[in-house]
Image (cartoon, rainbow, N blue to C red; front, side, top):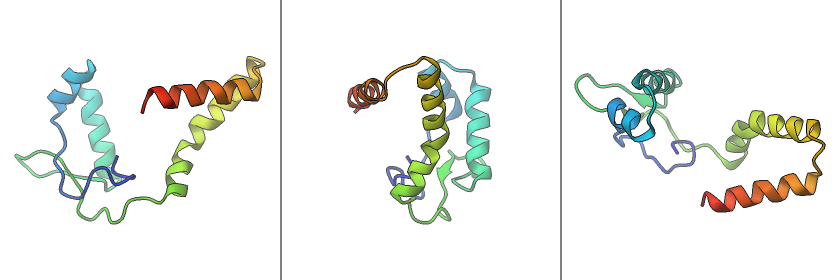
Length: 103
C-alpha cells in the first residue's frame, strides 16, 4: 500500500495488537513485519506513538517496480502450473477470476 501510494508519508499504522487480533496471527509476526518495513525505510518508529509511514520514503514506486515485486510469486505460479500440467489459458483465467474477486 505504501508502494502504490495508498498510504502517505506520516500515516499512522494500526497497532501490533490490533492487527494480530484482526488477522488472528501471533503478535510477534506483526512485530517482525513492522521491523522489516522499518529496516527497509518504509516505516518510522516514534517512542510512545504508533508506527508511521516514513516521511523519508519519497515517491511511490512506479508500476514496473511494483510488478517486479510480484516476480517471485509469478515464477512460483508458473512452476506449479507446469508441474500440474495445466494449460496456460486455464491458469490465466483462474488468476483473472481471483483478481476480480479480490477487487
